[in-house]
Length: 147
Length: 147
DNA sequence: TATTGTTATACTCTATAACTATA
DNA sequence: TATAGTTATAGAGTATAACAATA
Image (cartoon, rainbow over all chains, first blue to last red; front, side, top):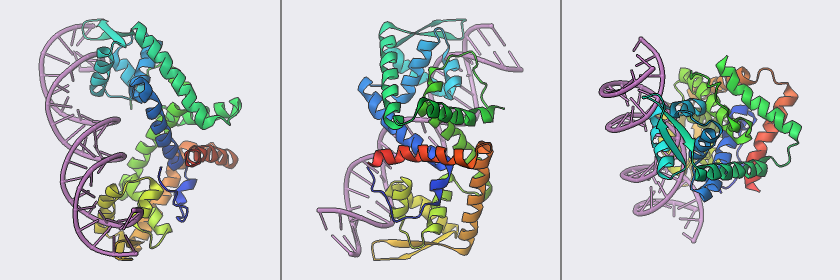
């Protein structure tokens, strides 16, 4: 916990991009700590949740959805398989379809519960309406770049 | 520009932390591209702007304000000095006070102009009121962790 | 020709430990 | 004892290039 440098003038504190990144870094750190209880990284948890929601998806598909390069998906998927959370079977000879195992299903549910508590910790005071507006604004940044 | 995986269900798209990170990554990439015109990284630009706003600040102080570790400030400050943007002089024997040079002042102004255009690109449709609310919500995440 | 999975590799960011000099 | 600056280093996360097998 760093000391707050109250004596410094910070022109950046009024920049949306700066505050966006700042908030993101803080939340990622919190989520990382919470998910450590399940021995999952945020990336692993996200992958697990996406596979659970999309049976028979390929790892390239997951990578595209999450913005993770093909090459970087390999060790992540291998780790989840070696832990028995997910399983893969040949799909069309070059691709493999992924499924969550029973224990993977439970783990995915646990990860989602943690994410809800994590989110509530930071945004508890938001009304449902405010929450949806914030969500829409943030989604808009993404959609903006996609045309 | 990755292909949008419209076929995948993504339970994470309703998670604030997920959208926060997603938006932050996209904005950082855009800012990095824009600041490259000035041959500055986002970190260098932020440091330059903070020194310009706080003459005689130390590099440890900048690091605390931006969340950059002491050790990681060293090459960043050295780079800005070698480019003639900033100068340091002994303060109390163990610390050095930093100032922007004339060219550094211009560079800082240019960086701030770029940041404004960058922000406007993503949040042009926001009213001043909405912008302030969003800013307050994001700042709240930071203040939350500081007690 | 394009895509999937894979390996190897490099680069950036961030984190820690240790040291010197100073307060 | 605590802080400033520094060095070296280790660990993530992310990026590209190349390859084999398949579509």
